[in-house]
Length: 111
Image (cartoon, rainbow, N blue to C red; front, side):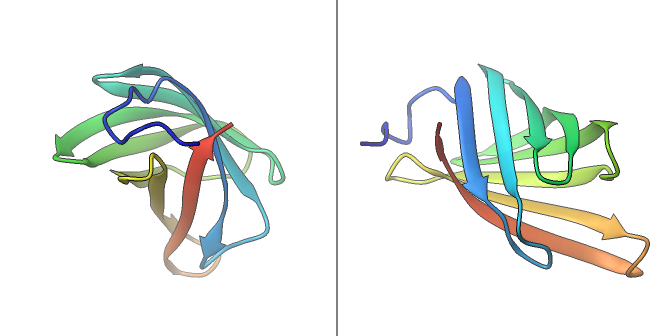
């Protein structure tokens, strides 16, 4: 059973990525909820980074992802807290190899 949407983000969340890229997971561990700050990894790529909150409006949190290791690039993250306790994840990033901005999605659940 998932916690309510108002529950703290602190802890580890995981989800399978879909969208312009797929075939890998996003695993994020929140160290704090207000402001949101976390470490993130994409184990199958492998990439890792940090998330820092930029803004918050209602149940939507905007963050910036900064890469600390691996071939990933800086991206804009949007999280939507859902009534069922999951988080809707969206990442927008520019892929130089494809010459355009890509978007990936996931439903994050507590791990």
